[in-house]
Amino acid sequence: MAKLTFLGAAGSVTGSKYLVEASGKRLLVDCGIFQGLRELTERNCQPLSVDPETFDYLVLTHAHLDHTGWLPVLVKAGFHGPIFANPATIDLTALLLKDSAHLQEEDAEHPQTSQGGRSERPPMYTIEDVDPVLKLMRPMPRLGNFDIDATFRVTAYDAGHILGSSSLELTVTENGTKKLATFSGDIGRYDQPILNDPTTPPGAADVLICESTYGDREHPGGDPAEELADIVNRVSQRGGSIVIPTFAIGRTQTFMYYLRQLEGQNKIPRLPVYVDSPMALSATDLYLEYPQDHNGEFTQIEAGGHGDPLNVHEFHLTRTVQESKAINNVKTPCIIVSASGMVAGGRVLHHLAQRLPDARNAVILAGFQAQGTRGRALQEGAKTLRLFGQDVPVKAEILQMSQLSAHAGRSELLRWLGALTAPPKQTYLTHGEPVAAQALQKAISERFSGKAAVARYLDTIEF
Ligand SMILES: [Zn+2]
Image (tube, rainbow, N blue to C red; front, side):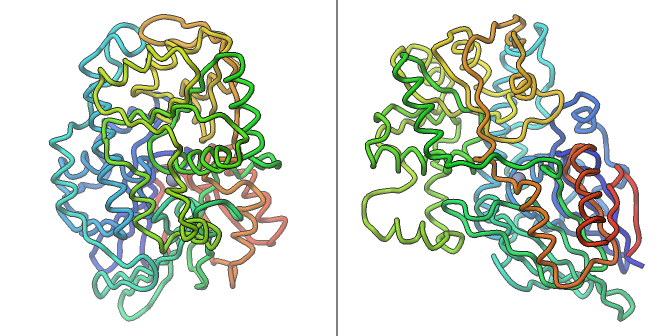
């Protein structure tokens, strides 16, 4: 029997790591960091229960840090096998890991920047630790079959979540018997701008590992462009600025797309937009480099020749800490996009320290805010936020735009599951907080009369 062990994203949204063992070979699917609650982030500092030196291969579903951000630690701990990912994911992972290393170094260099006076977290890794990871990266096809060896074959499908994001079918051959493990990866949205709809892998799975981030929630309806226009107009008319906590990849492009469209239609003023990332390479350029991921509408807009559809007119990239802090001097309305997405660290902390006490300003939360993060506290209406060792009053308007989420909502997850051609023999729900995973588990038993279990951290199952 092949074995699968949940080394992360079991009972939590972050830390995706799934170990598959068969025919004496070990393959790790994803290698994410844990974020949010301290009991989770402490796992980032603990060794894995299985020695990484014994892993033969690694495959990535997509570039987000909760799927790739622990790679430098894994490599430092002795992993030296190939890391397979499609070219877009390799490029984005390089950008995100460097960004993450820079931000961790900046946080550590300025211990007063974190709660309580001393740095909460020494850097898990620095920029020097990223290159050895990138040297192990090997491209695999964006779609279709790829044989890793006689035991493992990967078949990739577009998951429509971020550029390069994939659902993976893993065919495991052991003693002449083939078994199919399907990994949903993070499932994107249907009918969204820029990217294709998610594709459900067609194979009859012996085991399905399915994400459940929004298993208990729908995204609100309504036109996100109109809502964004309302926010931008309302905030800029009262002389305020907008802070959007997010990494420079994924949601940033969705915001840019809507802002550019709204500017083009004269529905909003042309405000300066600061993308505050140490990596000056525009992630947006990478989005344009991989047309295979673009949906029909976006391809048409690109062909229309009206300039770069993902760049607003007044676009600024900031590289250094000094440039980032200089944004504090911008007193006229502007939009600041800055990491990290859950306000766990990074430069967004000093933007919030600057902008939160002013009621004219607004903060837009668009991504998932994990338990224990400052983003979650803001979402839940915190009156103050602990920043730089001080309780900063939250006077700014806190807005939730989860319709700009890159994650499928509950009915979209069910739509994806409903497109399976055969019920999986076993289904495990991962990448969701317990309430969300349990809600999806219930829905699966009601809708598909199928059985699903909520994956438990460090459990091993056979298939
Ligand atoms: Zn993701």
